[in-house]
Image (cartoon, rainbow, N blue to C red; front, side, top):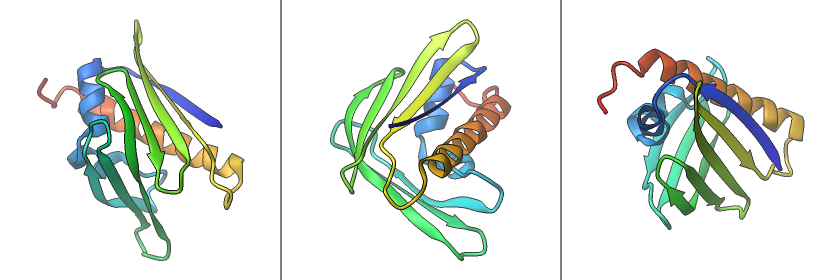
Length: 140
């Protein structure tokens, strides 16, 4: 398993919205300026499906990240199973500093674990920057 985490200086309700609403996922779900998410579909409920299409801006590479939610606890936990049968989870923990997000997932067999961890950490760091920049403009 691979695990990455960050602490977001924002209320849990805001963090949850920014993490789960497709219109926001499109804006933060990338590891670098060379990548972007071109499609975000998210049916956030048990047995609901999700699909994020990630692509380089020059269209030289891309992939779909898609699966089904196996357990949703609002403001606390998202568990999922990808269509290739790998599993993962995102834990949201409120503390004095804001919200700690810990994402844990099974790596794929094609890419090095180190590369996958760096990629996911870059995405979660991008989320932190987006959330902290936008948290005051989001309605509760």
